[in-house]
Image (cartoon, rainbow, N blue to C red; front, side, top):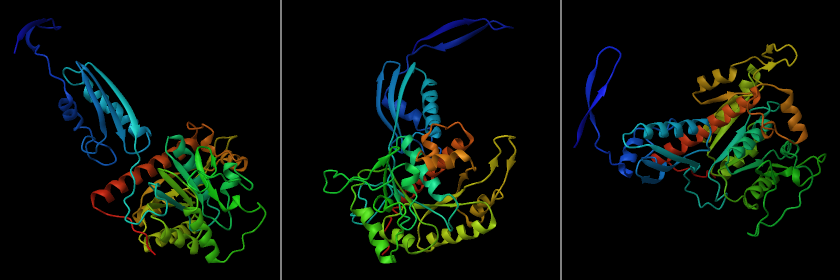
Length: 387
């Protein structure tokens, strides 16, 4: 070890300091040891033990590596990458860091035979206790934003009697299906998501007058007779209420979890609570509640009005001990986009008040799925299909 003297001239007194000029050996173990101090903010574990660090290469003082996050690269993961860079650049001997990012969505554990949706990692039901709360609008916009984040996303319109997804996504009319090469048709695509709806097979003004068994069979065909391919998330837009279709889906597929959409007023919250407790009674996981139509800002005077009250969903989530995923305001542009077949989140308005609200809900949902899958896997928990 070589020591040299360095003469420094501080403001008040001249001092002589010993400086260690011995070169620090930078290798893979050195890098991994430092990164073990960096934790994933959602899971509370270090990124090395979580298997998020890959492709480490060291060339003198230059370190290159890949950070593989366990969810789409939303802002939390970007901040995590920044923390890794700062940590490594603070190490003696490290002069340059080349950090690449990618993501791998974790899959919910399952023990069924995987005949249903074999390549779908996560299934998320968007539900409500009553109609008119904007559940389909929320489902469509969350699916679109997940796809914009880089995830592979499907959207199943499970509202057999009142399908609205074709209108909202611009995929209206009877669809000419094409074989995917597997002997099954591929779902039509729009805005980066795969979509299936009964609305593709009936005229827009034709009512679906089916008894429960026929609706059940149609839903099962949507799940099994289409080649959904590999998906990170399949969003299921359920009909309102707590009827047969909800039970059919819960009992037919390996459901990762559900999201309850409601508006803030007491009447809507009562129905939302019933919907939430239905999932609990069939032992389905609840990711949380979304408060839709949470407030309105007048575009002319800028005054805010809580048309349906405000904060009721957050309070309900607290009392029911489930997550609260966020609040989405009323905005005329949401309605215009839905009517035009161009969902709000497809329009690149991420910096708007509505855009930020949807992004916040989407981030919280992705985080909840990620944490649930990690906890389920670490506990050896498996998702079973209840029949």
